[in-house]
Amino acid sequence: MKLTLWTYEGPPHVGAMRVATGMKGLHYVLHAPQGDTYADLLFTMIERRNHRPPVTFTTFQARDLGADTANLFKDSARDAYNRFQPQAMIVGASCTAELIQDDPGGLAEALGLPIPVIPLELPSYQRKENFGADETFFQIVKALAKPMPRTEAITCNILGATALGFRHRDDVAEVTKLLSLMGITVNVAAPMGATPEDIARMGQAHFNVLLYPETGETAARHLERACGQPYTKTVPIGVGATRDFLHEVSALTGISAKVDESGLRLPWWSASVDSTYLTGKRVYIFGDATHVMAAARIAATEIGFEVVGMGCFNREFARPLRAAAKAYGVEPLITDDYLEVEAEIARLQPELILGTQMERHIGKRLGIPCAVISAPVHVQDFPARYSPQMGFEGANVIFDTWIHPLVMGLEEHLLTMFREDFEFHDDAGASHHGGKAVARVEPEEPGVSHPRTPVGYLDQDEGASP
Ligand code: SF4
Image 1 (cartoon, rainbow, N blue to C red):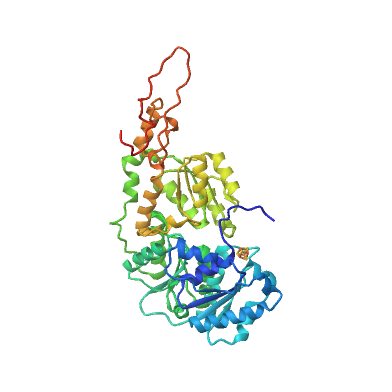
Image 2 (cartoon, rainbow, N blue to C red; image 1 turned 30 degrees about the horizontal axis):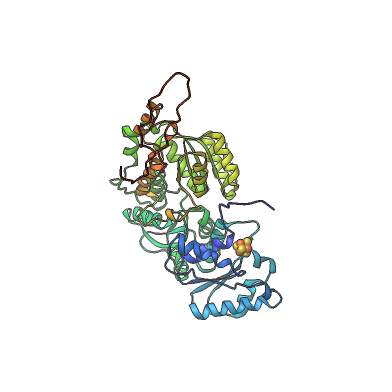
């Protein structure tokens, strides 16, 4: 047992739901107790989807346990097929259903449905959400994608984007744009946006672009073996990484990298004189390994921060993260316990935290500015506006997002200069953090009189007429 208040990742069947919900024409029959439908809210609220996830829950109750839960599963699967007529189906169990061992795969097979039915084995007590997504996508690809003749023109697949992925929607759009500039079209982007029929024709692409190793790497490796498709290893987050990515694509395809940097503003913004005060700011980075490694490179080489610590919650990627941390001379923290992350941040006292929703809370508690770079995220990080993290526009978005929470150069300068000021004193906080102005507490010195705070200035309610 482990005492847990916050978890960075959900159980693995939430990962499977992210794959199913991202896809079209696929249905997921999930053996699960009544109440597990709460996961629907992640998609309808946080991602604001306008449809229910394509998931049928068996929702068994206590009284069903004395009867036949296996039949309940079979009926649900049959009904789901009749009602939704999907091109393919995935079946599996949630944590509780795993304990009653009804074998959804075997039961669904016995139904003899006229579509591919893919069973999922997701060990809920050992693994988590990202593993669930990665494994589900791999099983779907393994079952449906077969070797095929290549398309005449050079095409690629984009792998790893899922429902509920941090900025996946706009990253796919941005990377598609980068590739099309080189004359490369996207054969299939999966799982997000793809149907099972699309998965079946993945084999005709010349190579694969792996955007999110956490949710697509096993499928990428499988396609490399089964269809002879190489896949890209650089994740194009940041200016340097995007350029490296384009070189990698160019080496894989023999097409020279055509690059349009006319919209790229990060390098000049960060070179301009107003960014001088960013130099050497101490930054702590935590999240999923892919986003953390990308963020560290941007922080150190493109903005000029000092990376004082980094870590990730997904131990599957501990090894590359350790190697990356070495380059910055920091000891990495691999943990899914937010209390350890909080203790580390408190110890290091950075001036900026780049993290997840949890680190935002930690930052708030410790009074340290924070920007979000990785899932888990809340509704505000599924924005209406175009906000990729990848490619050149992603770099622009990143620059603005990270700099915003820092006290702007002038404000910081003034704060230090006017330490003694009744308004801009040390504890006043930054204006954009929404703190109400607090008058400085005057030190008590006998015989010395201090100028009084102007009457009625700070104790007036905002908006109240004078
Ligand atoms: S089955 Fe798993 S996901 Fe569902 S309530 Fe129990 S622990 Fe949570």
